Image (tube, rainbow over all chains, first blue to last red; front, side):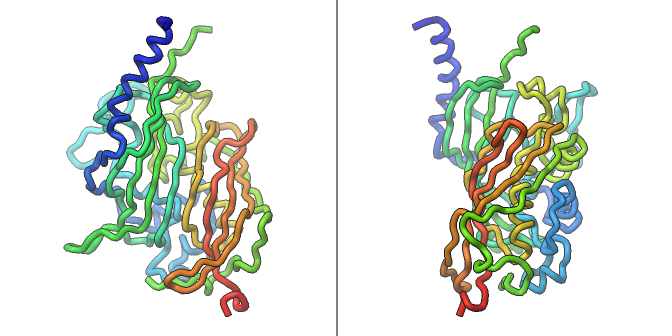
Length: 201
Length: 158
């Protein structure tokens, strides 16, 4: 075996503890709620860069004529409306004036992963969604559980890391004392990696 | 909520044929648009709005985020089916390569299957649409499947 091959096996071995955790719910059934309830202003802003024109999302009368209580969230908004708040009162979010400094914490990275190598590159790779019903304005949604269902170490054009797949239920915040209602399921694939060093030209 | 989208305008199952091509949606990916998208869908990963940062992660340029790409599939399908349609599932949404700022992304779809499902609310039309995004170098996302529920026409539900 060559030295290069040894190195190749070493970095993959660093992901073994993650692979061993396949099946584990990293939230232990807890719910990660979106930062805000679905509301018409945020729906409008979601539609704007898409130029998506559907009265169900903008006209309460049209939505009510079909039996909805209010305008509906675009189905794909399930990702946006389950992202937690970026900042809470009392927290420091920005602690550097470096041009490209990152916030102290973010829900959109792999920083909360307690196992495996530290990675600085991260992006989504694939998603599957199933919906039991539409979400309407006034409802707050969240993701219940975060079960790891796959971990595949792989070197790609951008770096060395692993493809990870996570599964959660989409739930609606209930009235006090009630159980959250499951309205869908989401399976998200990500690639967390250490970027290749840029070669000098 | 008891929902009945048959009161709304849009496609009925009888309007749909397998092999039908959905009208293409062309989406110019400008920096302005991607910044608007990040602000609205809350994915502030710097790779989606900061070229220098994106390049340090191995990409050529900042690129469209996951929510925006997935919602482009919803745009394609919604433009085609109108308010009467209901999106029940999205499968095979696989991002194969980056959709960079400074390019135009095309979103394309084709009806691959139709059927009638029995549900608690009665029979409903089900349409499977194969959707993909294409950039200057070919397919960037998908092809995957958007499963759409459509009302039946009067004759179909009789």
